[in-house]
Each structure stands twice: as C-alpha cells, then as structure tokens.
Image 1: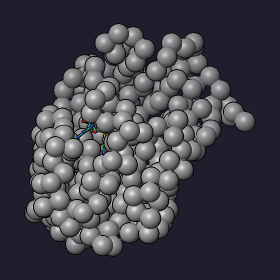
Image 2 (image 1 turned 180 degrees about the horizontal axis):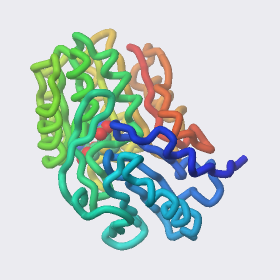
Image 3 (image 1 turned 180 degrees about the vertical axis):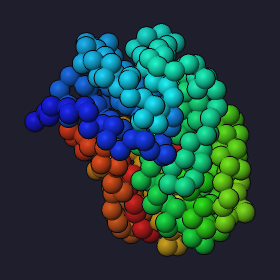
Length: 304
Ligand SMILES: C[S@@+](CC[C@H](N)C(=O)[O-])C[C@H]1O[C@@H](n2cnc3c(N)ncnc32)[C@H](O)[C@@H]1O
C-alpha cells in the first residue's frame, strides 16, 4: 500500500552535519514521488528527478523551504533532472558555488570529497552508509580486499576501523585517485592501504599474492558494458578469488539490481563456497525503505 508523503517531515533533523539521503521516492512507497530522491550534502540540498513527472507538489514544497534555508543549515538547493540530456542542474536557491566543484562532506566522523554536477554519481553513495558503518566496526586487524572500490569509501571506513591492511581496486583511475584523496582527508589507524586502478579480472593473480584476505567486500555494478555483468561474471569472479581468501574469511557481497533478489547471492555463494554460512543482510538505512525490499540494495554477509 502506498503512503502519502508528509514532506515537511523530511527536514525535521536539519541542520545536520552529515551527508545522507533524506528521501528515497525511488523506493516506490510514496504515491506521486516515485521518481524523486532528495539528498543532503551539507550545505547543499540535492534533489534528483529521474523521469519527467508533474512537479507541482515538489515545487510547492521547495517554495515553502526557500524562506527557511539558512535556518536549515543550507547554502544551496539544486535540482538535477536525470531524464534530460546531460543531466542539467537547476539552481533553486544559492549560487553555483557548490556545482561542478569538489567539496568535503562528513559521515559518522569520516570525511569524503564529493562533486555535484553533470555526473550522475557524487563520489559518495549515500545508500551504502550502513555498509560503511558495518565494515568500520568489523575490520579491526583484518586484511581487507575492497573490490569495485569506486572512491574507496568502504576502504576508508575499514582503515578507520583499524584494519591491518586494505587493498582497493577499481578500473576507473579517477575514482582510485579520489580514493587516495579520501584516505588523506582522514586520520586512520591503518597505514597499509593499496590503491589499484585496473580491471579486477586482470589482477586476480596479483590480488591472490596479496592475500590471504580476512574480509572481502564486493560491490559491483549490476551491468557495465564489457566490464562486469553480475549474471555473467559474479560467480566467475568469486571462483577465481577463492584462493585469495583466508580460511575463515567474511564476505560482504553487494547486489544493486532490482531484477535480482537475495536468492541470487545465496545461490551464488552456495555454488562457490558450499560450506559458507549466511550471517545476515546488513540493513539499508531506514530512509531507503522499499515497496519491494528484495529489489532494493542488498548488502549480504557470509562467513566461510
Ligand atoms: C557500484 S560502484 C562501487 C561503489 C563503491 N563500492 C562504494 O561504496 O562507493 C561500481 C564500480 O565498479 C567499477 N568496475 C566495474 N567493473 C569493473 C572491473 N571489471 N574491474 C574493476 N572495477 C570495475 C566501476 O568503475 C565502479 O566504480
């Protein structure tokens, strides 16, 4: 059953220092708001509209927010329309001071660089905040392999949590560079951080030499042209990486494909690691509630 959005409640915790998703219309729970997400990258309120929709209610709400934006700790409100070519951004309030420019945000005491603009991704996936929290709390003294690291936020969280070593790998050079910058922003206990800008499949042997890893994090795209396809490649990847893992390694396996549910990961693990135990699904932040939880982001923990 769809709910009616009490949109005023979205800002009840502002001002707030931490970056976070404030509203996840994409979860499908709110009639008429299914194409809208609202994120906070202090001091910017970042509204994303995914498909062309009637914006009357959103615009009315923004009109109500405008007179109070300073009290809410905001300096700018932007709307990015993802359905238009080039993802244009409209400035609702403030200047373009935070557009297409790097600025720092915090989450749970750690800092990360973000960049809001034409890019679809800011540099920090806010839906992964509980994943970062979990690895931070469980990385102590572990050797971590962070696959598909993007800007290495999960790796930074592990380093902050006292990991013995963290290997981050992503084929996007810019993302890895940003990962190094993210690490430099933070005072972390772990001094053995490795950053590899390379296709994971080309590095399996080298990664195995860097093991054995106690904690494997894999957060692949569901489909990225030739680079990775979860249906085609996830099993192959885990099979190849098996020798890189410690005997009692923990696996944090992510899946962000609405078409594939938890069972996809369970079956995958059962095939590759028949003796592994499913521990739990690391819950998404409450704001990410979805009309179909099996379709939302899945961050699953297994124990070898
Ligand atoms: C969903 S993002 C990862 C998000 C990241 N874990 C985080 O929490 O910020 C997926 C990443 O996988 C990378 N990628 C896709 N295929 C790859 C491959 N074959 N080898 C290395 N990186 C790959 C992309 O460059 C992208 O940065």
